[in-house]
Amino acid sequence: MPTPDNAATAWAVVSEGAGAGVDVGMPVVAAGGLAGLVIQSFHNSAVVQLVNDGQSKVGVTSADGVVTGTVDGQGTDATMTLDQVTPRTPVHKGEVMFTSGLDASAYPPGIPVARIVAFHTTPGAVQETITVAPEADLSRPLAYVDVVQWEPTP
Image (cartoon, rainbow, N blue to C red; front, top):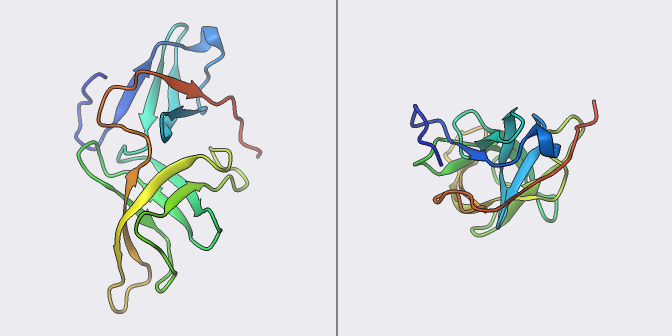
């Protein structure tokens, strides 16, 4: 995987592109879960913004639908956060969060995104403080990925 210029930037290049039907905005899934989103597509390659990129935001929900929020990337060497979860929402360490697939979402529903690593509520806070780790192994170069041919509904 090429080295990004900025520590908050996390991206990868895949060896298929527009010539194989890979287009900008298509989700990319690696072993374990969501890897990211195609942000550039060339004839024989594509650039993927990884889910842990500092600009990445993914709408998620728990398997039972009790927890909903947004997974925000923090950069290549950082864990991610799960934001917009109201205080006292029952969350559990190890719980997996999936793409929500809500209207106009960049992702279809049901793709594993992240696992809850830690959480706490600060008195007076307007949201839970939740740390998550990506389900896809992003610590190594992506060897095999699937590009999901998905177009969000407007």
